[in-house]
Figure: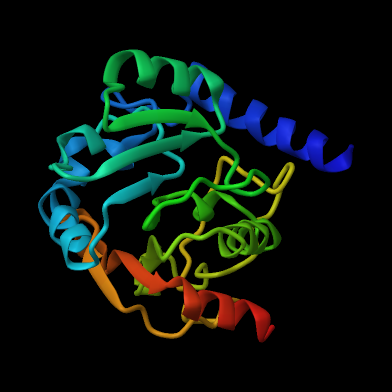
Amino acid sequence: MKIMNMQKARADFFSDVYQKNLWGSAQSRSGEGSELGWTSDLVEKLPILLRTHGVRCLLDVPCGDFHWMQAIDLEGVEYIGGDIVPQIVVANQERHGSASRRFIELDIVADALPSADMIFVRDCFIHFDNALVFEALHNIARSSIRYLCMTHDLNAARYPNGQNIELDRAKAGVNFEYRPIHFELPPYSFPPPAAAVKDGDHWAMSGGVKTMAVWDMAAVRATLSAR
């Protein structure tokens, strides 16, 4: 019962953000970071990353309103967009669903994940407290997914003394606020990623290097089991 209540609280939190456009973007209800001007690097480089890793099925969680991802060349790739907000899933399926593209209601922390070659987790864990991040990582590790691609912040210059800190004032493990995460540092202590692509030139202005980094799930499982 407690797990279901926590799951509902997370869904209610992100539903409120979506319905009221609390991130405040004029382009996307998923926030500024989902605007086309902020994602041009990924639009160019993500298709190359997918081809390099032989990705035929991509699970994107959370998919948000699919604003920038629709600009990605996903030819030959089955796309599954998952989100905890039911309204997002319904709207995306109506607007963007196709034979090779579907959207499902999905909680990355608690729900069994569908089979895919890669799970893509962008700007999600920055809003989770550390305990909830680990819950999500363990849930991913229970799946048959081969690669994990997630937001990996390499430079703390943007937020001095803020990297990997605990996310305060979290409700059900989530918060409107965020902090950057460098997954090679404690408490995560991941090995270096197998590959990475830069996520936005805009971060360079403040000395930051934000990436989408790829780990083989075998390495992720080994790291989690060693804790």
